[in-house]
Image (cartoon, rainbow, N blue to C red; front, side, top):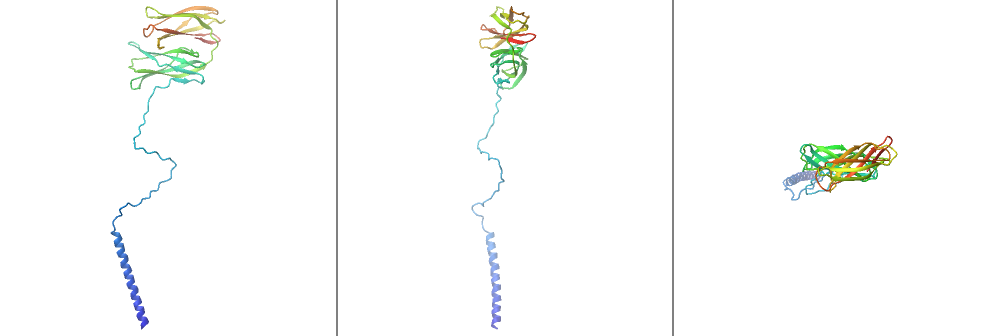
Length: 275
């Protein structure tokens, strides 16, 4: 009988143990479900994908990008680095019936003769906005080294604040020795307000000089162009001197005027220029 009783007690003890274990687990789960949230936040893990871009600097101040519209540069290097050409900003003269006449000069400060020069003239208002512009070609065919050539542009009635000039194109050319030289020249302002230029031209070559053009630029004391004129001269035979005369009406009347004379000529075999 003892072994049977022992086995019965063992079975009873096992059942009691199972009941106590189940009750303990239920009590533990109830306590954990009613626990308050922790005082400190939980840690969050963020996964960032790999990138090859460098991080951008952070700034607490706003960034403003301002684009300034400045007048274009007036220097242009031609095909040869040793040649440089500059266009002076024009001086614009107003006429009630003819609008604006803008005059200026182009300077060759290089070592080669330039030709086929074009200049863009632009008129601006006080806010820097373009009111009108045009591209003109120089009437003087050649600009020898360290010399200048005049230009002019005419606009309709435009209320412009200022004007700018920009070189658009220039070509380097080779010219032979000049045929004509100036033996004497004189310029005076007449009582009628005209500037009168007289000069003597000598053809010192053995060829007949044809298609002679005389370009006279009139400048004031500040070297501003106040007028210019191009005059054709009759052919000059070899070893012959000829007197020429021309008149220019300046845009403004001033006493301190001076002129610059430039001569171009053409023969059947060569193309020449003389300043």
